[in-house]
Amino acid sequence: MSETTSSRLLTLLSLLQGRRDWPGLELADRLEVSPRTIRRDVERLRTLGYPVESMTGPAGGYQLRAGTAMPPLLLDDDEAIAIAVSLRTAAGSSVAGIEETAVRALVKLEQVLPTHLRRRVQALQRATQTLQVYSSGPTVDPQCLTALAAAVRDTERVRFSYTARDKAPSKREAEPHSLVNAGRRWYLVAWDCGRSDWRTFRVDRIEKVQPIGTRFVPRTLPAPDAAAYVQQSLRNYPSRYEARVTVHASEEALKGRRWLGDVTPIDDTRCELRTNDDNLDWLAMRIAMIPEPYEVHGPPELIERMRKIASGIGRAVSDGPDAPGG
Image (tube, rainbow, N blue to C red; front, side, top):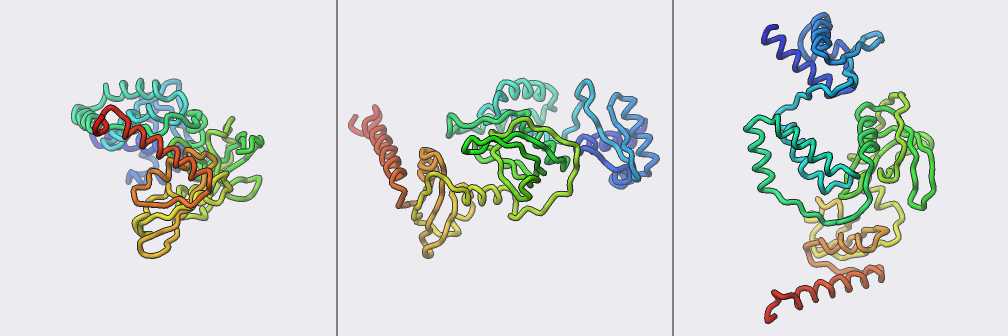
């Protein structure tokens, strides 16, 4: 087998691993060869043990199905480093039970990393520390998360059980658009087929995800991107507590902080912030993380909670063993 053919086979395999299915003509265009050459290359991959299936239809096509064993993955340098770094940070993940699995996968990956990549990963590990801000929170079933991610990738409708905030159960059929991670929470942005509208679903409240085999044409999201849509949905959704805060900073200075909430300029140096949550502690923590000077105007429960937090911090600082004069 020539060097050119070997290189083309690796490129073909990488393409098949990156997407659910490929029309034969599109593969031929990408590799700049004839459809007949693609057919021959697919046969070579099958001979090497890769389960490549032919698809029926006017144009035909190919897909790499799951086999009895996972075939070798082709990763470029940046992809390998991204996976290694992601596995290292998975110990603090909100995905249930993934910590030990991530460690095992990382050990296997580092065994096969080229020396120059292993050095880069290890250097990044030594230079990086992870701050675990929240010690508890909702966890997500990894099988549920990966099933939804596959449905997003393949533009395939899914059915699932959903438990609303008021504990009301329901059955949903949806066209998944994107998954959005916000701290320890995951959200699914999807078109709800039963309600004929866009919806944001908490993934930790989703169960029994089932792809139904129906493909769909992606709809246009009514927001710049999925993260903006989730932020908009959370702002519009009635929460138990809504904070009203004056922040001594310009609108421009606060523009990049989506986690804050709804920012409205008062003048060139001040903005009004409105942000909400059902959890008073989370709300207080979010406001406490604002580095600029601010005043909290309500609600009363939030003001009282922040006073207690400030008092506790003050005692810890003034009465600690390292306090001045202590």
